[in-house]
Image (tube, rainbow, N blue to C red; front, side, top):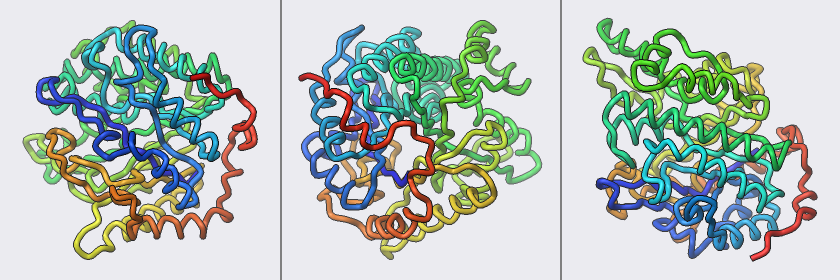
Amino acid sequence: MFATGIENSIPKIDGGRVRVDQMESCGHYKYFDRDFDCVEELGIRFLRYGPPLHTTLLGPGQYDWTFADLSFRELRRRRIIPIVDLCHFGVPDWLGDFQNPDFPEQFARYAGAFARRFSWVQMYTPVNEMFICAQFSGLYGWWNEEGKSDATFVTALKHIVKANVLAMGEIIRVRPDAIFIQSESSEYFHAECPAAIRHAEIENARRFLSLDLNYGHRVDSAMYEYLMDNGMTREEYHFFLRNSLRHHCILGNDYYWTNEHRVSADGSHRASGEIFGYSEITRQYHDRYRLPVMHTETNLIEGPRGDEAVNWLWKQWANVLRVRNDGVPTVGFTWYSLTDQVDWDTALRQKNDRIHPVGLFDLNRDIRPVGRSFKKLIADWRDVLPTQSVCLSVPLAALDEAPLPAH
C-alpha cells in the first residue's frame, strides 16, 4: 500500500487557550478537492485521513458530519481508500484533555458512530501515535494538559490506549473485517557513556508501553512497577491483557531523523540522527509483536540543495525493502504528509504560521521534487509489489456498493 496522508493534528497549547488545527493551517478545508487531485496525480490509492475530531464530536452522542460527508463522499467517488485517523493529538474542548477519564468511552462511541455512517470504510488508525501523544501532552508539558510528571504521562497513556482499544471494539461491531493500522513512533535510545546505560535501558523499555498495552503484551517488571507507581491500577492493567484485538492489527510504525536519541549521563537525551535506521528498529518491534508491519510516516525538510528529501525517500524505501526481504511481512510505505505542514519546526508548541517544507506538494499544491520521486517510485514498484498482496477482504468494487450517508 503506497500511501500519503493529510495532516490533521489538533492539539491545544498556551494553557489550553489556542487550538492548533493543521487542516486549517494547511488549507485543506478550502482545497480538499485539489488535495485529492494531488493524491491521484501521484498514483496513490491509500490515504491516511480523518475528519477533524474537535468540530465533529460536539458532545456526548452529538456529531456534526458536514465536512466528513463531503470529503468522504469525494474519496469514495475517486476510489481512494482511506485509512481513517480518528484522533490526532487532541480532543474537543468539552472533553478537556487526556487526563479526563471520560475520554475513552466517549471516543469509542464516536468511533462506532463513524463506522455506522461510513460503513464502506475498512481500515482505521483510531488514535494516532499514542506514545508520542501521551509523552508530549503528559510528560514534556507541550500540549493539551501540559503535564510534566510520570503520573500525568501514565494517566494520559492509559486513557489514550484504552480509547484506542474500545474504539476498535466498537468499529468491529459494525465491520467485523476491520483492519487497524497503528501509526506509532518507533524509537531507540543510545547511551553515549557508561553512566548513561541505565537511563537508556529505561527509555528503551518505556518506548514499548503504548503498543504493549494495545496488543495485550505483558510489560517487563521495571515497566510494571513504573505503571503501578504512577497511577495505573492492577484492574486497569488487566483490562489491556483481556481485551487484545491484535489479530485485527497491522503494526504501523513511523520513522524520522529524530526517532533515535543520544542519552547523556544525567538522563537527558537529544536527537542523534539515523544510526540504526528504520530496518533495524523495525525488526526490534516486529520481534516483540510478530505482526505484519507498515511504514506509516516519514519525511525530511527539503533543504537548500533541493535533494535532501529525495535522498531520504530512497533511503527509507531501501530500508523497507530490506525488512521485507529479511522475512518481515511488510504491507505498505507512506510519505507523510501530502502537503507541507505548518509550525512543526517547534513541534506545534507555538503558532507562528511558519511553513514546514516536508510535503510531496507545497501549500500552493505545486509538486515538490520528492513528490516527483515518490510518483516514479510508485510507478516502478507497484507491479512488483502489488496491492493485491495485502489481505484486504473487500475489493475496490465494494466501494461502489455500500449506501452513501444522507446529508
